[in-house]
Length: 107
Image 1 (cartoon, rainbow, N blue to C red):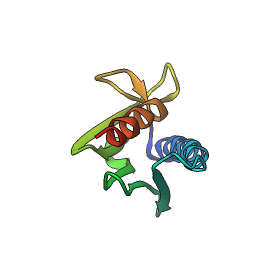
Image 2: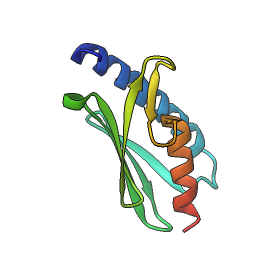
Image 3: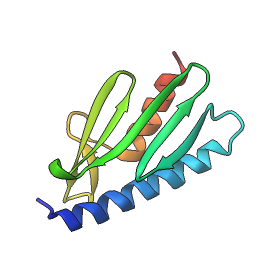
Image 4: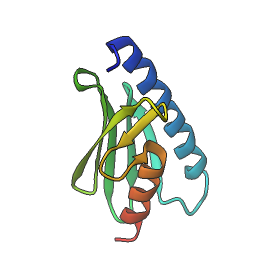
């Protein structure tokens, strides 16, 4: 298990990479969402259909939490891939968020 400093660095890097990925997607006129960061928390905002995803590091349990589609997704650090992974599906952070955005926009 990571210590707090290692987790904070890994989470910051993961969320920074996700933010950059989402900003690149957001520039597409067809994206259907906006991304904003507030105090280390990423928010993905949708107008149609209305909705909001919240992506935040949870330091005490060393996870990244995603609140999306009325569900909580908790990603753990995977030493082998050196990234945060959803154990249930083996998805890493960016593919998971991309899938959730697609599912939301298809509602």
